[in-house]
Length: 274
Ligand code: ATR
Image 1: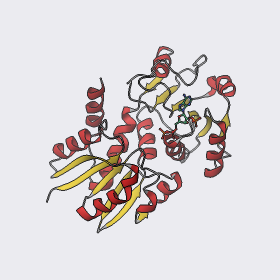
Image 2: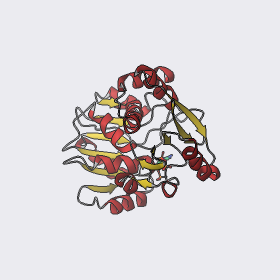
Image 3: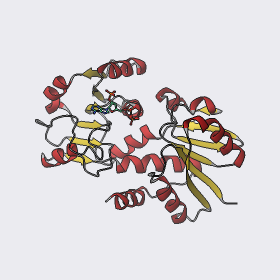
């Protein structure tokens, strides 16, 4: 019987998840379909019960449900629980188990452009996306990170919550700018520079280290002002398409046990956005 997968979110019409998952099912010859479901916050509990009752095999969870779905699941993977957000649910034998593939997906994506161990990083942001990314990046051996956030208290409490004091510190904009020549990798996790605010940039890149990697999780536009400036300074740059593709690929593997073609996913997303 055809298996059904999907994503729940609000808004949801812009999601590119059905595009890449349905293409992967077709490409792998699997009898399955992926659909985007618009679910209002007040309907989340009913929607989750509905997924179970209808025998949906697995689904993604996006804004604004990633945190609020946790108490509605039968089981939550330890990493997702520590991150405090679930983006992937596996339904097996009538039980729903939550995972987070955003953090590991980001790390996999970053590994496509640089080795991740023993790197000194600047991570910009301390919101929901940053939590998953910081948690996962700091599992990599030898990573140390400065965290820059508009609201410094959020960076400080995130470091405390994860007990990352020995490898992380919250920095001011002034400190981050001064330390720019020391960072191997700059990771941008905020919405600054996202369409339609394409003129905005979260930090001036005056003195970038030679061969630095600058990675921005934004994919609309495909090249943010930050990435454009970094590229012109000779940095290795990465936009958010690879992270999007890898978090999807990890969810796909979690559901089906099959490894999808990630490059194909990246191409589809880039073509759709380009
Ligand atoms: P997401 O789940 O996408 O990470 P979020 O949890 O609302 O969304 O976090 C948004 C992040 O972008 C935060 O780090 C936020 O900074 P604050 O913690 O100070 O709010 C950052 N951000 C959003 N708009 C910003 C702006 N105009 N300037 C600087 N930082 C901004």
